[in-house]
Length: 202
Image (cartoon, rainbow, N blue to C red; front, side, top):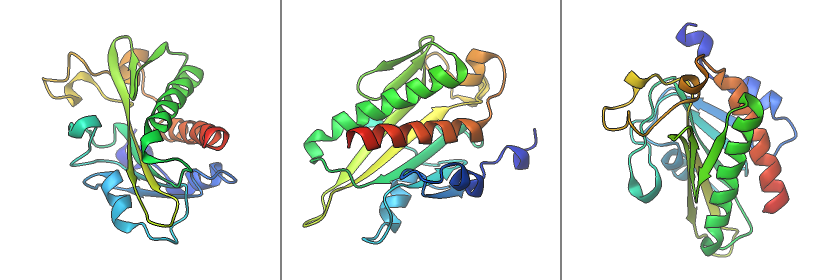
């Protein structure tokens, strides 16, 4: 599959997610530093909740505790969602945990893989970390707090796509299945499940 054929399609995602809060608007970028940082940089009071920004590559993706998240170009799903949850910053871990469980559940259902969540935010398959969740909240005086939910999923990586330091601990869905995974289909399934989880709990 050529890079053009495998590129994520924002318009098709918006159509598939019609009626959902998460995914009511979708942007796909070739490259950015961090999708979380990008949303924080563009958000205004008028920006609708549920905006999703995906990047084919991040140059400064982040995990928990400021750790660097590797984002191999065109191999995974790297995206952030703008939320306005009715919770305090102290309750943020609950949203993080729900999001991680939602990602894991989607992978189980869509790909029939045995997936586990290492609380609060890491998703594993066969002992290899394949996904992580990072929620960053910003207090807005007199308004509902902003939450930027960042998610990274290693989809079609091969061992050589990871740095030597990560090859013993990181994995991907393709490595586990022995075949490539359609990133567009998986992204839509994950976003739909996140939308259901968010609507039911927040």
